[in-house]
Length: 246
Image (cartoon, rainbow, N blue to C red; front, side):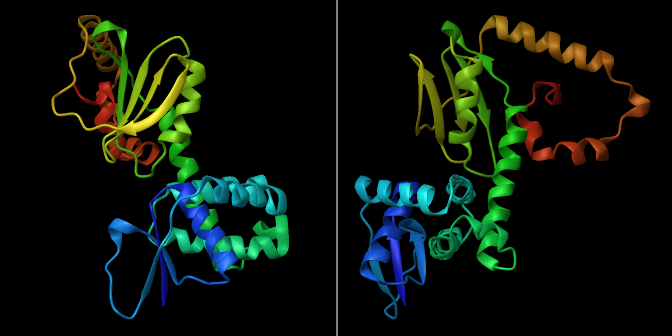
């Protein structure tokens, strides 16, 4: 068995695919190095991320398959599901043979897997755009924390780049200890692990109190339907909603 070990980035994954094609070698698995348990029956090949190789595969997917397929595999990659890398690899092998009609091959298991992973990530991205709550910290910095199931920071940041273009803000993915930081008109993703609790401004405390009182005052106890609420908005998202922390 041949296992490719890459660095966990999308660029590294596409570099792995480039190396596989040009070595004429079909890996059994492609995996992130920290998840690998090595054994003597398997040949492990370390893949070094290469920007030139990445761009060649990236452009080949756009030109020879479709932009939609490129978007699909990127979303599937962000799902971080087990063995999604080899599903992407097999999807692309088929895509380079048949072109843009690949997404019509719904009887193909890899096409189904990629479409399923992609759909779940898109669904969470859409939900999170309506659930991210910024808090004002001292000096006017806006901060929001999230705990998404999927790695969606790079998908939600462009939305807030447009909506909050004149502010400085941070979206913190606590599950992955990463943050999207926006300043001077640009955003970037970096590692972030907070040692202490966030201190919000006095104005933020006042607005949170006003919002909680409003939410409480308009609710009708007799019509409260917790089950329906959880169907419309899974409970895992409630932890960062101000109105749910009363």
